[in-house]
Image (cartoon, rainbow, N blue to C red; front, side, top):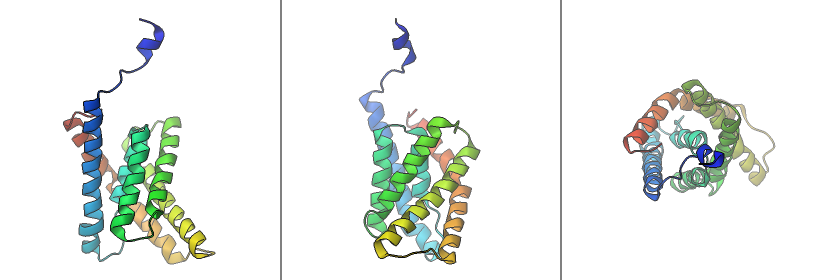
Length: 180
């Protein structure tokens, strides 16, 4: 056995990859359902926790492959479809968040609860800024109001507060289904 053969992990089987994809599809469907219907109805459309963003940050931290990037884009696109916003805004923002989290997690040790909470907080702010910047370019707006900044901060704090619960549930379900 050569040094190259011992340093690489064995390739996952097609069954494991399908289970992982199915796990994320189910988790994303549940997050989309809760975020766009149940939580939206409970809060009357005010500050809503961004469960899909938490899932995208989880993908950026633990899925360093094309499937993770595709999943983040698809979750954003589905959120665009369900929320009735301009098509592409959330898809763009979730892809940007995934990319930044992925790049940071490749350089820093990000395998604890505190780092996950911090990444979700900054990811939520990044998503909000990306959406506001895209809308500003589209609608020729030159500045952001204080109310928008306060709403972005409140949503980021709420998402960060829910991160340990969501990450714990995702980790538990992934272990239960035989994921990594």
